[in-house]
Amino acid sequence: MSSPGRLRRAGRGALIPLITVVLAFIAGGLVVLFTGHDPFRTYGAIFDGTGLNYLFPWVGGNTRTIAGFDLQQTLLNAAPLILTGLSVAFAFRVGLFNIGSQGQYTVGAVMAVWIGSIFPNMEPVLHIVLAIAAAAVMGAVWAAVAGWLRAVVGTHEVISTIMLNWIAIWVANYLFQAGGPLQSRSQAGNPVSNTIVSNAHLPVIWGNPLLQGLDAGIFISLAAAVAFWALMNRSTLGYEIRAVGHSPDAARAAGISIARSYVTTMAICGVFAGLAAAVDVLGWEFQLSTGDIATSQVGFLGIAVALLGRNTAIGTVFAALLFGALETGTSVRALNSNVFNPELASQLTLIIEGLVVLLVSTDLIAVRLLGLPAKLGWGRPEQTTEGQPPGAADEAAPDPTEALRPEPSL
Image (tube, rainbow, N blue to C red; front, side):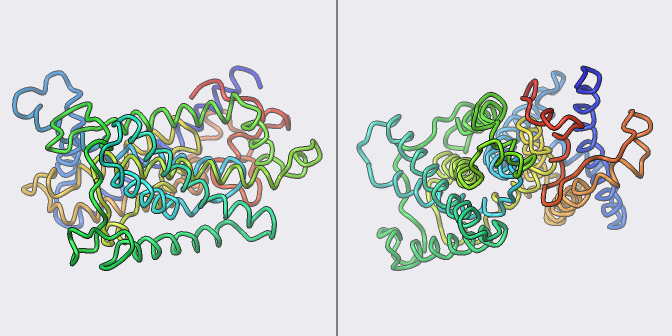
């Protein structure tokens, strides 16, 4: 593909999510207006609550201090979302649907809290690495089950991953319920795990450790995004995965094992989800309760993050930052209650997130109805393949080998 063609494709890949977000915020603004509030003031207050105003050099004094604390929370929220988003996006690139990121996250969290709490005298760096590795491996094993079922008996991964989600959730509930095998013996009446020892805490890189400052998990997430890109675009395995996602029949004819690709892909997805759990448990949660397990939505939000990020590394990072900022900016702690009720704002976040998923799932709304193909030179309808997620066709081109070429950048 020529350079102008690559630029058009890159521009389309960035523009569609941007249009999607704008439309979602417009619809959310209408909801705010119908409740009798000013959408512009509300969104302004939400933006200030995200802490992103910390990046403005003219913000100073106490306002800057508060903004810094809020920004720490935004990045804390974004770190696991980056990883669960990568977990979903990696499967999409091979034509699989990983709806099981929540289950993989849950089993990873169980392993992280167990390993993090049973070695009180272990050297800190070794303890952290061991807990992270255990969470990642457990997530990989859990996800690989779905890949194996798809490869060997043809069970659709949507069904198997959903079922594995519930198995993981209920097993974790059993482990930490009152009298459960891993329930804290020091809190006999409380269905929680043991607290991980201080040696297994991720180091805080910004802020006060006693006030839940920003820990090193954000660097783990960003490193995982770089690894995602490198693995997908600079490795033989990534070439095979993209080949299978583009055309399983052609990949099989070229000697690529489809079954092995499915199992390997799902295992890698589980690694990302397990890392997300380790980042949360070792970074700020420090223990698990049955209530945490039942209410966690990190894995499910990863689906929306991957869709908005168009299944790319850099797109997933920015999508996770947006969702993390929304969670922080609409929280009861961060949002100015004189502008908008924070309890209602949390529902506004769900509306915006739902609209993002709805709109990003169809290029018809974001592109064709707005007449963008004619304006930007996209004359023909976007090629799609049945069974592939939205955005997968962005990797396609008239030349069958074009989709297998590495992406030029993150």
